[in-house]
Length: 252
Ligand code: 0L1
Ligand code: MG
Image (cartoon, rainbow, N blue to C red; front, side):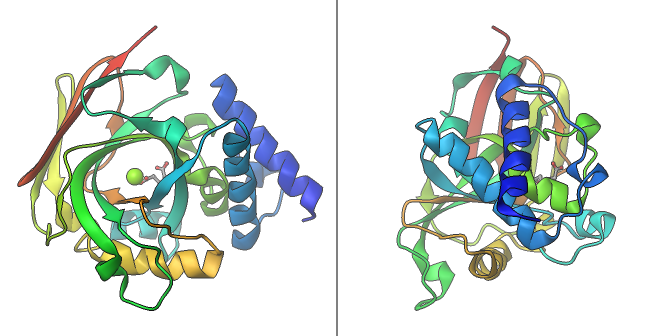
């Protein structure tokens, strides 16, 4: 697959996000390998940066054994977070901008220094927080292949972070996420058995895929429960000893 085709597919995904209109799987018409999928993702994110957004972090997907098995893969996927996706705790989030958004309760880590392989990634982290990630696949009905979802920046669409706390062990913490009257519960150990493992998994994939990990970045470690639909009204996430983090879904 040559450069112009990579650009054309990134453009297709970008237009889907900007217009809030879904598209069909790229795999229906193109054979895409995983390296090409990360190149499409890179070009897709560059379009956001060209519109004035800045990089704020990275996120992991496929961090549960069940999801990896479902997709037939054995490595996590990594996407990029930008300033345009950031929402403050307790803010209003216009859900009309999305196609079919869902939310997930997550652990967020904050990098205090660049990850360059000279020290363990854990020593680059200074803080941890509860987070809600908004995912919004640009593909119709959330139907995608492994390479499709990597190209689509791992469905990244938004996030809100609760109060930061000093970096510590947050494994085996009960988690609760509600959207209006719909509630899911789980545990932080659903994230790779321990969310701290997400850091090593991230470092490995980021190194192989040429994704820089910079001081100040937020790392969304992965979902602690299945995602639930985002509808208008209050969204609230509680993780024992962390959080809370909330926002209101609004329709303009
Ligand atoms: O952040 C996530 O867990 C989502 C990864 C992409 C897969 C999906 O959209 O369900
Ligand atoms: Mg997620």
